Length: 401
Image (tube, rainbow, N blue to C red; front, side):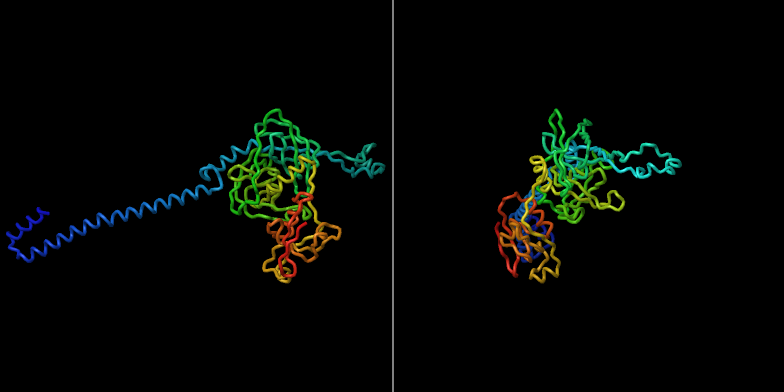
């Protein structure tokens, strides 16, 4: 400060600046130094504090996003690799043979001399012919005992089944049980070594847009891995209308030979069993369907324990609601299962259900349509008490039975 004042004095002497002007200049200089000191002491630390706070909040938000990611792999670029490494050893290739007996179309002409002469019919024309059908598919090892879950249309009716593991070893398999209504079947191999198996996750938590991986043997090409997303949930009316359907729709590439293979989440757990494709060409067109894991595990356990599936029954015939029907019953949206018929001898009638009731909830779970209600009833243990939420006379009611 003294140095600046001395310099001003020399300037005053050399330039003969008036004393009043010198005082003004000194005041301005002092104010400038004071302002600079205040900015350094107050304003700059405050700016640094704001930046530090912002960084902390972003870091916390970032850590929350990472923790909420639905897969264990560090990123999508390697997630599918991890799923393939984990799951391929528990996915098997199935070759089935079915011996069929069919009527011989030439048997009716065995005594006709014209056919004998011009077509060379033998003297002994068999009444029936034998033929062998060969098919391929995929299966999932579901426990260390060698039980394998696949589709009914793969293993049902087979007279000979051969299973090939990912390491190339082969085993004959026997049918434990099949369930045509869900297109599922369980077979078993006896391997004298520990077998890898896959864990099933809760398909009720599946999200549309969720990444999934399909593994199978399309066209006989072993250990093929494809990826996609869950395109939709609760698809019904895809195959047999009398069956139990609640398909997950996926755009992961599925082709003939993939049937019975797993649809996996990015943590390597089974969320569905690939079963059907919608295709005019007979190959992949981006629309595949998988049986949800909750239905698959329920059926598999029943087949392993009892060789068949015993389903709940309440003696009603549900149907879907249209917008006009919903409006006529006073419902804002067409959600629920309308009871078109209630059998007098059934438990539903005894519990007080009536024709025209609309089932809107089953065990506190909302019911979207007749298929969802049918599946809920079928998957309920026989003898279990259930709670139904119904819509009757434009009001909600609860019925227990």
